[in-house]
Amino acid sequence: METSLNSGWTFLNQIDFPSEMAPYLVPGESPVASFKTVRDTATFTNRRLIVRDAQGLRGKKIETYSIPYSSISMWSTENAGTLDVNAEIQLWTRAGTVKINVGRNIDVQALDQLISRSVLG
Image (cartoon, rainbow, N blue to C red; front, side, top):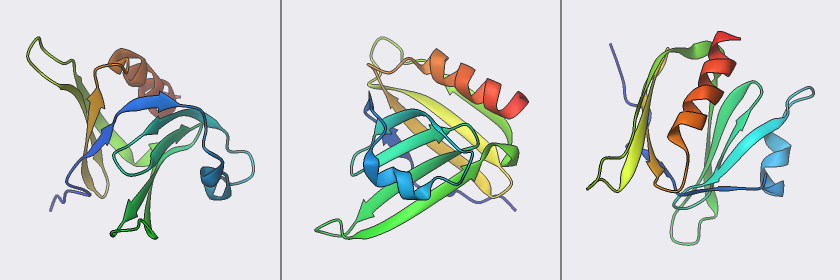
């Protein structure tokens, strides 16, 4: 049975590692790339993808998703076409599928390389 973990995240642009993500890291884990999402941030580390999603009117309710690279069995990337607003990454994990929309100013091929290096070792 396959589930969808989310209705889709959108990575708007690449940012410096945000300090509010530091408490989520474990010893030996380091950030590789961080992105601004619609409401919060996402960080690829050397071990997993962490998405911090602020919810509610004031954003005080925080939901955090952690996807270890070891749980990713397949992924696809799709470049934005001439009329498309976003590129797209889809991850198939043990828990289900994850769809990530990628803003035009983010290099989707670089993200594909990051995922490849992380999953394949």
